[in-house]
Image 1 (cartoon, rainbow, N blue to C red):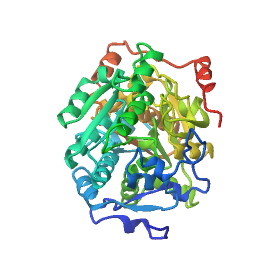
Image 2: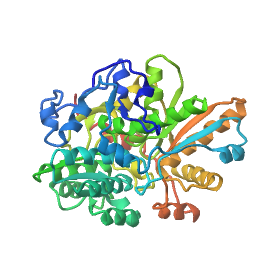
Image 3: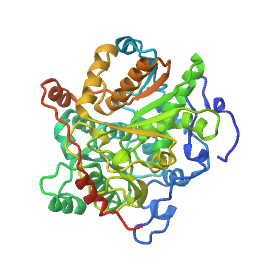
Image 4: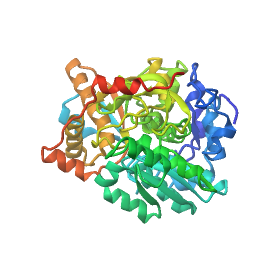
Length: 456
């Protein structure tokens, strides 16, 4: 689909479900830097990527000029089981804070997977099935992505192999069992099943794992099995494209009620939820149609934006994936085994990294005890137990609303409630028992990893 000036409303069905995903890169004057082949340091080709990813997903990954990509009918039918998702005015939270700010949240937890991850999982499973593959491999942090992908694979009749970060595998046994119920094989990572896993275990004895480790294992598993491809739940441009349905629906709802956000806030791990939420609103800013603030919220224990380096780095710990220019803590960074869950990735989306580099976005890092304080307040006022990841955005939203109160500003705030926290009760138990602590990497620890960045 070529670039055109077709109005956004053309891409809405009668039920206000978007009919096309929005590619934010199409409106970026300065495009994200290309992925590089680590051996040649040349931009990776479609042929190289197709050894790992589905063919159609590779096309989406490399396309930075097409603004709207039609959503396949089969994916639309699946979406209608749980979409459009609600845009909710947080009246009770506003009242509790005594703020003049209008607070809205886009709730992505109203599906069995419990999070926004299903938006991309069904798309990637569909393209894998269309290509005639036997199955897919993937990694998962807190388990939302693995759960979503296992559901999508069951729907399309695909085998699903999930490498789950070891500390989450142990902290969230019920998330693991949901995946198994949908037919997925779930392996704690790093494991002894892959060469990458064995090497990581030897280099980091007793490690609780990381998303970078799990990615290494999942990629190795994909390329070593005929009829399999690797799929990813965050970071890559193709994932942000699919997740744009979040922001597109939110924009349609705001247009309908005659309001518009002054600031958009989202939790940031690899970038899937944040990128999807801000997409159409950022598009307006990039096109010069309006101006607003965008705030990425990350854990202080894994501060890619706020303390990372903008540089080319490996996307995985075993250094088998392409190099991506992003804000990174180094592919060897091993985050603490805290409850930030899906926000423990060492790097950030190339698209979001470029926007942050251009100062089109802001970023803040928050500690997990303050995050759970915000989660508790939200649960007691709005009646939803939020996921730890979502609660990072809630923390920043509360802080922003209180600033509005102190400054007398009537601001409209939108944040992403990425999912529910009903599988995260171990974390809530530790918080309620006063046993939760905050772990923040030292400058020396970060510098040690920066020293290992590729010389590009």
